[in-house]
Image 1 (spheres, rainbow over the protein chains, first blue to last red):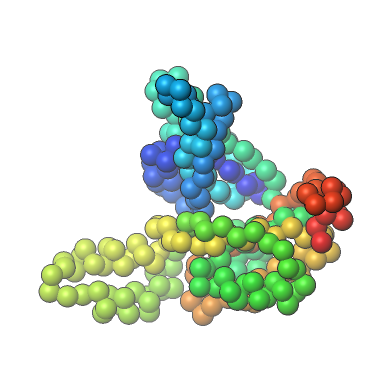
Image 2: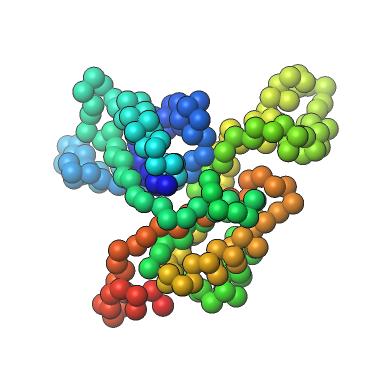
Length: 108
Length: 139
């Protein structure tokens, strides 16, 4: 199983989550975060804004669903035709074990 | 070295903390998050709760289909609800013990929405105070 951490624009989160849900990936956790990227934030006039609000979406998915989920997030979270700075990132990490508390057993 | 991520009900934060101390794990990080789980495919599982909520929600001002739609979306897992995300760093041998403690503390009679536990591998950890790394940095 894989943990997908996707950092997306807050205005795109509803669209991303709705699309993932209709594709059968309903379970998700989201956190409001602030961060900056390679561009060192945004400079407007003399002011540098390096705590830009984003939404972090956490999802644990089976190994074979990786491609589907990632292409889906990439296509929806992109803004403009070729993408824009600040559209976000996706990190994928391995998950050893998953337990569902209400069932008390291992598995998603 | 493993990282245990547990998404639990807000109401169960205190119980989880107590269970962790009882299991011998004192350190953790907790974040307020929004979460939802798998969609409920079996309508029988939410029937009792749905009836209870519908009897509370109906009044002369609201449409019945509207109320029912809202109540169903509350119960079938399509809405996000506030949850608490615990992040605990443990030694490999302690993983089953900690999971057991979290599961017993968080189980409810509802059978749905009690949360999930993920176990992730961690490559390294460093204690800022002393600079020691690896297993020694956990506790």
